[in-house]
Length: 218
Ligand SMILES: [Zn+2]
Image (cartoon, rainbow, N blue to C red; front, top):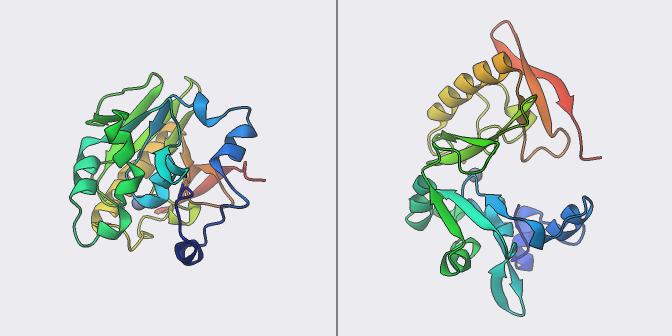
């Protein structure tokens, strides 16, 4: 998520509530601490996804997960470190600099699996080399929609975000994925949806829509 390294001004702009929510309390609910985390898959390096990679402790920026490897695709790493004017505002070096300095960043091409049981799928419409984890236990499979399916409202192919660097590419990628997700009966996970965490997908005439929903936010 956004993490906690925010000045009051930006907390207001982005409506960031660090009093009610924290990574420590969210993990604690399931009996884990930040020290237990061994691997962090960074889908892409936009600040609202990797702000929580690091935190401020005694005035210094430190890794939030001291024992983790942080996995990043090479294409997104290169872009984040040399962004265009369109996406420069979405990348903030303080979310990864200290990780790189401590040798905690693992750069991958994203085509090959690097964690057992998790495959990755790359897209380019939202940002270059966005890595979607595809997580399977052998029975059910979950596709992590990240920022090409941020909300359940983004299931219809033309509903894309103005943040996308190549919206037409996002539409093509969504269409290919929706065919696959529906055929395989995968769950599609929504990183930004406050109400619906995941769903299976159905099609009515030419239009894709939610089928079975998963709600864990209550
Ligand atoms: Zn993004």
